[in-house]
Image (cartoon, rainbow, N blue to C red; front, top):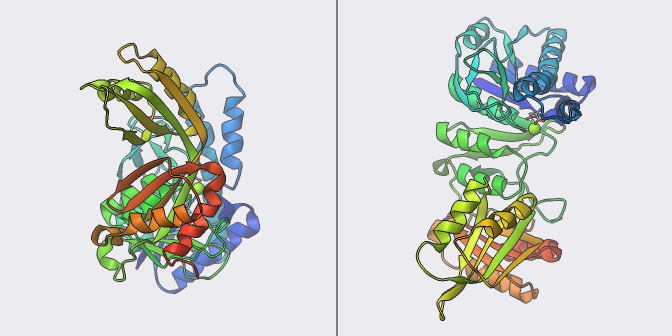
Length: 402
Ligand code: ASP
Ligand code: MG
């Protein structure tokens, strides 16, 4: 088999951890597998490098920022290769530009265009392990670019897709994806198998195990992703296509996000073009809108509520206030809210999920402020203080407790 093993920052945080990661590689090599290792920077290093750049008050040049922040992964690539050689495994590190991993020009958030697999494959054929730094690529001008924070997951999945690997194993400091945040819900269980779609919802809803774009990429190229712990031998979570999940759960997990803020426009005019105008303005300010609700109108006006990320609340407020085309009676903002979601592919074919959810919340006297749904999730916005209680009661209501 061909396997990509990706080690996150906490898994390569110091030399003993790099040695133990190298041992995980060795056990795959010993089974006769061809292995490509993708590494993150040692824990904390990228933050430190970003901090150096930010020390220069005048806005620094992103080309040079990428030269600086990509360095962390170069260090761990070399060290990982040395650690493997120390275990008598032939290995070679290949940096982004040496492969090359071609990406576009968007410094600090580049997208991968293509990966030339010829060098990687010829080293694998020689029986060597290839070590690749995550997070970096090279653009057409031969400048180093980085893929955005957390981008090593993207490198791992992109390489797995390009060499048609059997598995892309993501080694991290948790042993899988859980039915809810185990720090909050003590009865949370590890999920054995979850679909890409569910994982995408969970990831974008705050389950920070995998970078969201890497899951999108895995879904697009049908890469079997496994989330595994670097520190235990426990079986992890497999993220795969729906066909491979035989026992589909109606609800697989309860996710939450504290990064929510709500804006309400009270008594906006109700005529064609109002919503278009408001959301046009928000998109011009580059603000991502999440939930949207609009009421029916009786007197020619209506209330419109939407949510944005907490850190974008003030710019969203400014954006709306600067829009001269629309009038409203009152603008209310509230950032003391959280979003709680139930996620599951089984919802596509089962009724009653919303009913169970709303009933469980009602029994705890938790008020629902905004509701939004997709084919495989129901989300509600509630007061932030009730987040834990909501997660715990929903976890129980959907029979997820262990
Ligand atoms: N080292 C980079 C970061 O901290 C990329 C990664 O670890 O995935 O964002
Ligand atoms: Mg990471």
